[in-house]
Structure formats: structure tokens, C-alpha cells
Image (cartoon, rainbow over all chains, first blue to last red; front, top):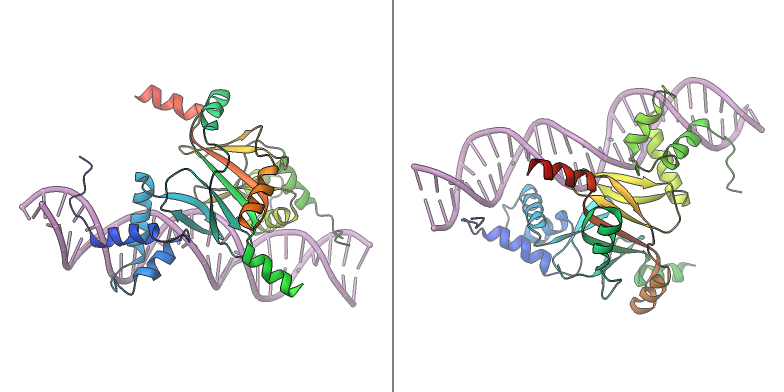
Length: 134
Length: 134
DNA sequence: CTCCGTGCAAATACTTTGCAAAGCG
DNA sequence: CGCTTTGCAAAGTATTTGCACGGAG
């Protein structure tokens, strides 16, 4: 059916790159990460595969940080923290529960499937920096 | 202080446009909305003012929907629902309690100031459409 | 006169896409 | 051979920015 014929070493590498980091990378990050090992990799391919993974639900989008979409290879329900200063993204475990989806669906007549929770503020590292300065 | 010298009719119009709709508009939407009344309004001005409002905390960003940033003139704490099909944005009441922020801040050593909760799925209208088709 | 706000257009930045070549079964 | 994947470069879309002009104090 939906089975891929062509296994594609590059595709696997892209997926592994996303899964193998806690950085919640952007397309460009993945590209630069793999470029040394795959000199003929193209940015378009990275974008194409990430879009595919996302629509397949294999990875999720954390949202847009400083104009770049960021991805997460961990699909278990958890929240994120985004630093407004440096744009780093942090996993937050055990955030508010996502079973509110059904309640929202009922109350608003929609069909809510996912619930993304994003905290925003200043990360530990950026806080230290501003303390040193101030 | 930070007081504006030049009041600017256009700036007020832009803010009112965002506040006066439940659509959670994009910059372009605001532009097209005001263009008839302000024929010499430029898109750059809309972007500039929205960015200003946002950094002043007068409006908030709902996030990026289909590549466009969407804004909300209501700054009281509440959540949002985004339709993956048509991109419409809905206010969801009873949103994030601020005490999760302090808990996250404590546990992760960050300084979480805001918590954005976004539900995603299919809106009532889009659901009807697909029912008719299917 | 001095500043701020703006129009306009050019510049950026990110992402998508068309097409021919290459890979896998 | 048939279908998928990719490199490359061009195109597309959203947003930002430089600069000179116009209005308010």
C-alpha cells in the first residue's frame, strides 16, 4: 500500500538526524548536519522529507521560531519551552494533560486532534548571560 | 517617556482592525481590510506596526498558520484552536493557568512568562464539508 | 526645524516546485 | 521497465529594511 519501495539512505539519515538530537532542529540545521556525510545532499530534499515525515506523523512540528520551522522526533505527548532570546527549544515533561482535546471538541463543535503547549520566556543560559551584563 | 508624539490615525486603525475581529488576522488581512479607507496605506507599515504592538504586548501572536503569522488583539489569557484544513483560528476559553509557568520555571531553571496552548484539528465548518463529500 | 511615521521598492529569508537524471525492485 | 527519490536552480511567499517625503509640535 503506502509502503515505500525505495528505502533511501538519505531519508533515513534525515529522520535519524531529527531523532538523534534534543535541539528540535530546523531544516537548515539538518542540512548542515548531514552535508559532510552526504556531500550531494540538497536542501530541497531535506525540506521534502521533513514535510513528508510530518504529514506521516513520524515527526511533529514544534512551531516557527525566528521564522524557521522546528521539528521534534519525539512524538510522545509532551510540551515545549521556547527561549525568546536565543530560540532554543526545550522538552517539558508532564505538562498540562492533553485529554482536554475531547472536551474542547465537544464544547466548540470542532474535531481537536492535537494540543500543543508552548511555554515562552528566557532559558537558563540566557538568564545567566543577562545577569552577568546587568 | 515612551509616549508617542505623533498619534497616527493609521496606527490606531491597524490596532482597531486587529481588535475588532475574531478572525485572528494576518498582516495581509489587516492591509486589505484597511486599504479601501486608507488608499495610501502600505503593507510595510502594517508589518511595522504589528511588530511594534506585539513587542509592546498590546497584541499577541497566535503563531504561524500556513506560513503567515496571525495576531490576536485580546490579551486576556485564553487558548486557541487552529483548523488544519482552512486555517481559521478560534478562541478557546478557560485556557492556561499562570501557575504552570512558575512550576515549569522552577523545574527547568528557565523563566517562563507565557504559555500558549494551541489545539489543532478540523473546524465545524470543514467537517461539514467533508461529510457532504464523503 | 526636528522627529516620527510612512510609501515605495528593493532586499532578505524561508520554503516549495519543475524537471531531468539516478536508484531500487 | 515502472515508480520513487533527488540535485539543482528557479520560483514563490512572507516579512524586513533603507531612504526620502510629509505632517505635527
